[in-house]
Image (cartoon, rainbow, N blue to C red; front, side, top):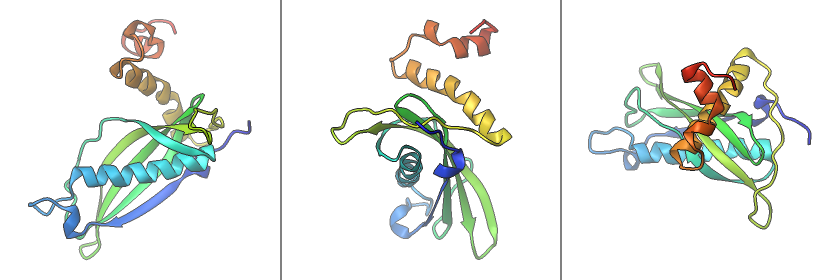
Length: 173
């Protein structure tokens, strides 16, 4: 299977924060942002896999800045690593107030998707071939993030997390 560069999965999605998207303080509701992020990440994963994908996990999403009514949201998504049947997608979220000209990074997160065949069974995905220094750094960190997700999800025992053990305890992989 031919590998793909992260740039082939790069997706930019824009949304305008409208009154129906906000809470009583006129801030964007977190659930609405997570919904938009899931869509952008799924598009990115589908571009990489050329398959239908389903969300397997969402890493911690913390809000660095409130997003206000009328802001324009830009979500950038790109596959950071491919595993056997899944891909990790890195997202960066920016909020822009067009009248004032301000733009701030409000969120970042990792979503994991699993590729499915026409019968709903998992299917192998193309390898990801990082090119830039930043892509290589994200690629190398993806295995540690994956092991942490698997431990937190009860699918891996902490003792089996060789990458995490090496990070915390300096043990050999």
